[in-house]
Structures are given as structure tokens and as C-alpha cells.
Length: 302
Image (spheres, one colour):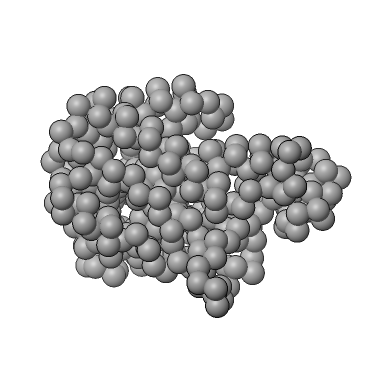
């Protein structure tokens, strides 16, 4: 089976954990055996998040006195693809996978006319006091927004339109390799008169995973995260995991936009586009989620 797996941030770090290399290696060592078994049993594509990692690099770049300007966010995203790809490759090989593993630095085409390009709302980087945030925004042309008791930079989050390295990924899969693709949602690029141009934006990694799964003709999209599935009445005594949804019933749930909402949207997009299933479930039980034993399965129709 050709399988696309989107790994949530908990594959590398738990919530609130310091983004140190040793912590990330330890987290991956814990989940890698299950991922290695999936790699050995299927044609596997892994898509990972990069929020804490790209935020760390963005903060360091903004505060480096040697630089006249911070590095573009797209280049920092590319750096995290290499870093996290290396961590994943080492973890999978250490866990005993028999499949060779390749990481592709992935560029994703977005539409400069996407309405989301005009709504910078994705928080990235360090938290500043308002005075410092406004000074940085003036110096670097940033958009900023309040976040709790502080202020942070915000960037757009456009929809992915095309995976530029898709043919390379297809070739690698055909050669029997596990492929790490679209890390952090991919490096966002637009087409202009000069060719391709990297932009300061963040693409949702689950949307990118859904597009990859569609374009690679995957039989299943699995979104692995830190909850047991899509939960109705979350936070209440009546909270229950929903074993199955359709895109229509998922829309009626009014899920939070900052957490489960984008995952369900991505899963629904894949199901509607392909007529196949997507599943959302706990990373620590990855094999049971893929097998349909755990998690929430989303089908295009009942």
C-alpha cells in the first residue's frame, strides 16, 4: 500500500518541551520502531511539522548582530527540512528498517493571489514586549500580533498548489525507498517574471500531506498526533472519540482552527478528491491507526 503519514509535532517534542537536539532524538527513538515497521510493510512517505524548530532559527536569525537582516523564512524552513530529515533517517535506520530512506528538500508552489496571503495570522518566532515587537516590525517590515501577554511576528499561511519535487519522490518510491517529503509544509514559493521566488509564509503541513497523498495516488493518508482521534464534546465529561466521519459531519462539529480543525479539513480534502479514506489518530499507536483499529476514519461518504 502506498501510504502518506503526517507526523505531528509530538513526534519530536512534547508540548512546552525545550527544542533541544537530544530531546528530539529521544522522542524519535521512541516512535521510530513503529514507523520502521510501516516503512518495511508499505510504500511510505513521511511529512513532518517544524513549528518549534523554525521558530528557534527565526529567533536566532532575528537576534544575530552580525546579520544586516534576518534570513528569509523560506530558507529557515529548508534548513529544518534537512535537520529533521536527518533525525528521522537516523532514527528509522537505528530502529532497523530494511528500506533505504531519503529526505527531499521540498518547494511548494502557492498562489500569490490566495486570499490567505493578505491575512498574516500564523504566529512564528520569539515572544517580545510590544515596544520591541513594534521596533522589529518597523525595521524588518514584519506584521505582528498580540499573543497572550506578549507580541509575535505573524505571516500568511496560503494553500499548497503544487509539490515541485513530486516527480523526484515518485522516482524514489519506485526505487524502493522511504521518502521524507514536504517537511514543515514545504518551502513556499511563487512564480514571477524572474522564475521562482521564496516568500515569507508557512504552509500547513497537513494540507501539504493531503496534496502529496492525492498527487502520489496514495491509498491512505494517516495524520498522527497526540490525541486518540477527533473528539466530540472535547474537554467535557461527555467527550468521546468519533470512530468515523464524513466531510459533511466533520464540518458540523465546528472544530478549533488552531488544532484539530486543519487536520480534519486536510483529511476531508483527501477523501473527497480520491474517494479513499484518511485517518487521524495517536502517534504512539501508529500501526493500529493505519490498520483502522484506532483513531477517526474520514470517508467521502457513509
